[in-house]
Image (cartoon, rainbow, N blue to C red):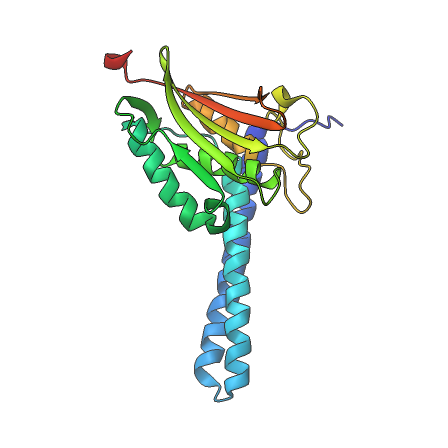
Length: 226
């Protein structure tokens, strides 16, 4: 048998599996909700609340896994680079409050617009920030900046590197490869696919400062600003 399976076939399989499992889990959630209504025992009601929370968490995980391999459908918008950075900082505070406390930001003043998808760009950048935080010392600072360089807008994430050995050029090019225990190895793969769909480049490199490692994303400007 051929051991290789295309991403398209795998995505289709996971979409169908996710749909079926979510239906099953939603049925459990509805049954739990009904039992909460008919029981008078407070302890039982509290336990059912925990069951429903676990079910919703499982549904959300199925959605995330299935979505990670979906084809990228881009809706283009012009986004001022400084505004993008400001909005990203807000999303980091909501999604990763502990990481947010470690971050140093710059580039909010930039007015030139890059061409992106207003939702997908944040999904990709949040994954890169999460990845940088995971492979850096928890007491170290994370630096995120935006700059205008030649014909592109560059977003950089700087970290004090830990566990970044290997060929960084291959990171995120294949799914299901992760050094993080308990992770599926699809987050960085999804981020790279999004950025490629946006026409952006993704590079990882060792900085000139000792121990500093950089993640760099270069976005194209709107045509009238090129």
